[in-house]
Image 1: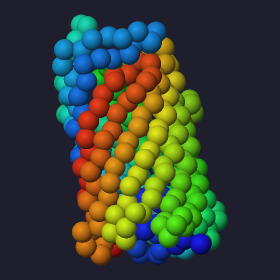
Image 2: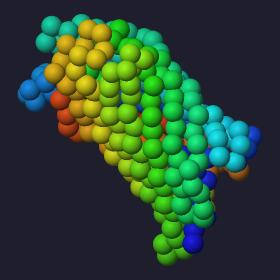
Image 3: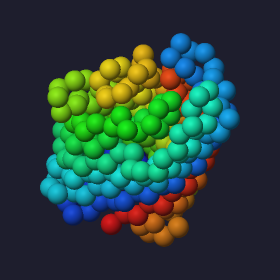
Amino acid sequence: MASVPEVQASAWNPDPWHGEVIGGYVLTDADTAIDETGEQVPLQIYTKRILQNYGNLGLTSRIALIGTFDWQDTQIVGQGLDISFSKPSSVSAGLQYQLSRREGHAVAISMSYVDGIDLPTALLTLENREASLELRALWGESRSFHGHNVFAEAQLAGQLTLKGDYGSTHAQLTLGGEPTKRSMVLLKGRYREFEPGVFERLAIARQRRWEVEASAVYRIRKRDYIEIGYTGIVAGESTVLETGMKIGYWRKF
């Protein structure tokens, strides 16, 4: 049976006092949005830059500290919109508990406090952000295929505002493989849905979006990795059909 993948396996908690920090820079643009009825809306200008940061640290054999910090710089012009902002888009901190773990298999759950909501592609500003609690379930499997490690990971999450209202649903499926000892390829699919009327000034029927991401990761040193990939939103409602690139730096400790 294959060993547990060293990187991008969130269902496997890190060992006590070990962990990783992943930084990424996402650059996207678009000329078309989808409104709440599913109709296309032209955009004169749409550019988005996000600085993403994720980290985890093992505290015990079953508990890990997790956190994120994203900074977003966006400009939207079109159909009566003239919006630009540069501010944190989401900051979170929480704990992840390892329900089960063995060679090639892991299940975990996490709870995080999230200061802000992820609305990078809604046709509105981030003034709608509201603090919430996120509950997440993670499942991972790893196998050996013709001498190469391959793995799959699924995540399902929901967010509740501090008032107890259900705010959003997030789902992600990651497929990965290691063609060489120093490289890895990743393919991700994401679905996100935000409930209407929960967040202040959110005047849309509902926001849904389907995203895809493909990237390659290369180990440059024992604990250091670089990532280059493509990301895009392919369908949805009240969202922007943006595409672009992602670059990242990963550090394990």
